[in-house]
Length: 205
Length: 205
Image (tube, rainbow over all chains, first blue to last red; front, side, top):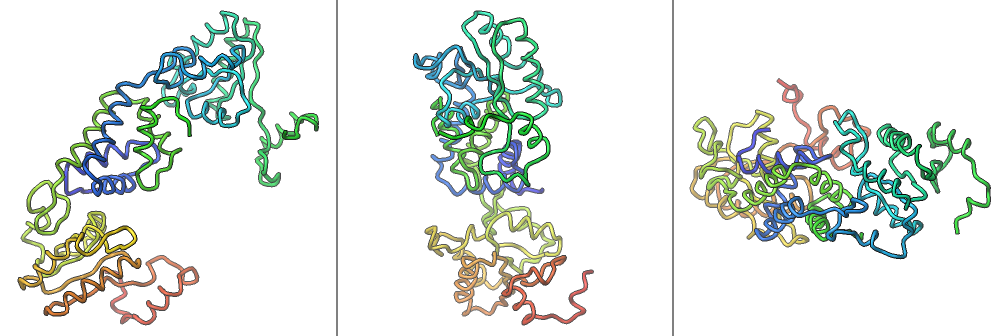
C-alpha cells in the first residue's frame, strides 16, 4: 500500500507485525489512535515500553509476576507436591479460573517447535528437572495444547523424567461438555472411547 | 480477569481499548511483544508516540500528510475542478487504487454521528464550502459509506451546497461485480433497478 505519510506507515508496519493483524486492520487501529487524545496515546506507548523493560518472572514457576516469588508460589495453602506444566500465563489463568486445581504451576514459556526455532534449551525445562530432582514434587500434570508441538514437548520432558520417581499424567482428552458426537473428530472420539471412565467419575459435582 | 502483574494488566488494558480487540486478543498480542527483542518493542512504542505527536494534515484536502500540501493536491496533472468527498485516508487509498479517478479529494475526517457525539462542526465541512465558494470547484462527488451516518452527512452537505452552482453526485450504488442476485438485499437490488444504466456504459473497459 502507498501511504501518504511516513509516520503513518511506520505505525501501521509495527501493528501489522502482531499476530493476526494485517495491514488493513493495522491502519484501522492507527486511525483510531489518531482520533484519541495525545495523553491517551502516550500512555499506550509508555505501557508498552514499561512492559518490555520492567517485566519480571517468578523465580519458582517462571510465570509473569511483579514480585520475586509470585502469589501462587508463595501461598501456603497450595499443594507444592503437584506441578501443572503449562505453556504460558494464559494457561495458568485458564486453569485457575476452573477453581479445581490446588497445586502449583511450572510455566515453560513456550513449546518445542523446530519450525519456529524453539528448542528445549529455550524453555524452562532445566529448572523443572531440578525441582523434581530435589524430591519436593510428587506429581507432574502436563497441560499443554494437543498440537504436534505440545505432544513433542510432553514426550521430551517425559523421557527426561524417567529416572525420577515422580508420577506423570496429562489432562484428560475427550468430548467436551455440551459437544455433540456427530461433530467430534475421529481422533478425539476414538481416544475418548479408549480412555472411557467409570460412570460415577463423570458426574459433575 | 485476574492478572499476576500490574505491568501486564496495563498493557492489556491499553490494547483492549482498540476497536475489535477484546481482553483475550489483547493478552495474546502483549505476550507476543514480550517474546520480542527490547529494541523491537521500543520502536513500536516510539512509532505510536511520534505518530500522535507529529502527525500533520494536508492544508488543502485534510488528508494525513508529512508535507504541508500533499502529493495529490500538488500534482498539476490532477483535475482541481472535481472533488471527491470521503471520510478518511482509507477511502482515499481505496479510490486511488482503482486508478479511475483523476480529480482531487476532500477528507471530512469522519461522518455526522449523534450517537458518537460527532456533529458537523467536528468535520472539515467549512473548508469544503469555502473551496466551493471560491469557484474553483465544478463538481462534488460524495463517496461516503452507505450507512445512516454517511447518508446524513451527504444530505447535510448537499443542503449547504444548494446556493452554489456546483454539480453534486454520489458514487453509483448497485449490485457489485461478481455478486449473485439471489443474495443481494432488497434495497440494493431495488435501487439498482430504479437506477438502471444504458447497457453500453456497463461494459468494463
